[in-house]
Amino acid sequence: MCPVCHSLEFEIMDLSGDGVVYSYAILHHPQNPAFEYPVLAALVDLDEGVRVLSNLVDIDPRDINIGMPVTVDFRPTRHDGAVPVFKPKAAVDG
Amino acid sequence: MDSRLRDTTAIVGIGQTEFSKAAGRSETQLAAEAIVAALADAGLTTADVDGLVSYTIDPVEETELVRTLGIPEIHFSSRVPYGGGGSQGVLLHAASAVASGIADVVVVYRAIKARSGERFGRAAVGGRGTSSHSGSTAMQWCTSYGVLTPASWMSLNSVRYMHAYGVSSEDFGRAVVQFREYAANNPIAHFYKKPITLEDHQASRWIAEPAIRLFDCCQETDGSVALVITSADRASASDEPILIGAAAQAGLFEEEIASNHYAKDIAVMEGCAAMADRLFEGHGFKRSDIDVAMIYDAFSPMFFLQLEALGFCGPGEAKDFIADGNLGPQGSLPCNTNGGLIGEGYIHGLNLTAEAIRQLRGRSSNQLVNPTTALICASRTGLVLRRP
Image (cartoon, rainbow over all chains, first blue to last red; front, side, top):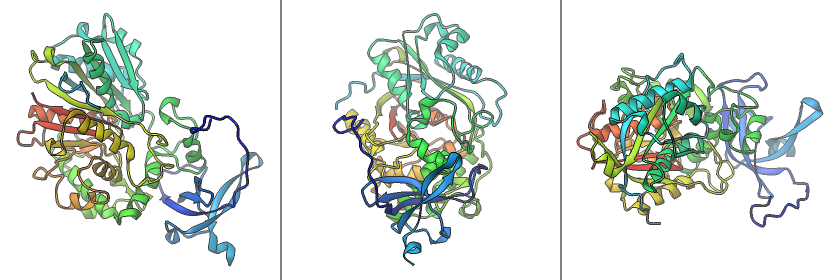
């Protein structure tokens, strides 16, 4: 339900996939066998104004900075699914 | 808001079990043992009890406690959400029930096997024990990306806070060193006789870099704490009553349990600030009235955010406030004198309440000189307690 108008209507729209890192953390411990460590966790503020929690990929943990531009990538999961993750924007441009 | 709660109710008994890493008995037994001890401290019996309050996350059922303890009849029970953030709300609920006349004597309790039972710090994927505390669908986003523990949830807030105000791991470490110094002198603390230096803190391994090291984390603990609340009139006949001067609870739109990832600015704790307004202004207290404070230190960065939200210093100023020694026994705001959840143990915040009462009774192992007014804050619930 929309918390503003209480409407139950919704539509699915495409997003640019671009955003900036709002916050992050490099997770070392404890470890779960389902993940590779360190886990690079991030909150990404998408250009459309939505914040999502995700992982950063294709980046050295030491190079992560708050405010850095990132863009979406997709990583396969079990059952033929895929989850959105984010990589540095620069890696795409060049 | 102008609360009618002020000074109308009192805490008349504290009870607790030993704090350990393996209690070797059920949470129900731990709760019952702590309640029996609290009633003995209050000079009351189970026949006097007619209300029970705990956390939504607590595994001990009220009906089972009534049978276990031999309570003849209860007239009130309730539970507070928000996990440890609700830990001081149990006293708000108990005091409200007593002040309204619904109940005469209410027991609040928390029994936990956070080490030998379900560990919060374990990296579990999927179903945690109860739905009521894992709170929200927001957690599904966390677990899918390996953000599995309270430390990892809160590290995202912590790193943003560090970025916003130029705060370092060393800054967090200064608070931890002070808590460990208190714990070193507290015989029931996990870290009794084990103080650390800032260098020790900096040498402890990363849990969630660059915010949370091992020594920034609270202790997963087994044990139980119970408190007995009754009217101020009835309490005047007891030995060491402590008045509930103020009690407040605030939950805001866009908050989550144990994280706040989607609020506009996660480097501030708006829910805590809203709670503090109701606690202080709503009950006629000033920050300067507070002689000693217990502030929920599940992870040291969260202590900083609360200190600022409570209004004891401005945004980003906690590091300087702490570096100046204000948390120590000679400081302007001695904090977590039992060692906090980091140094004493983690009975999900209710052991902080017990320590505040000990300070006001003059019985803390780190006793301050004649404190009369204590603050307890667990982000979105809080109390001001007073010696009559």
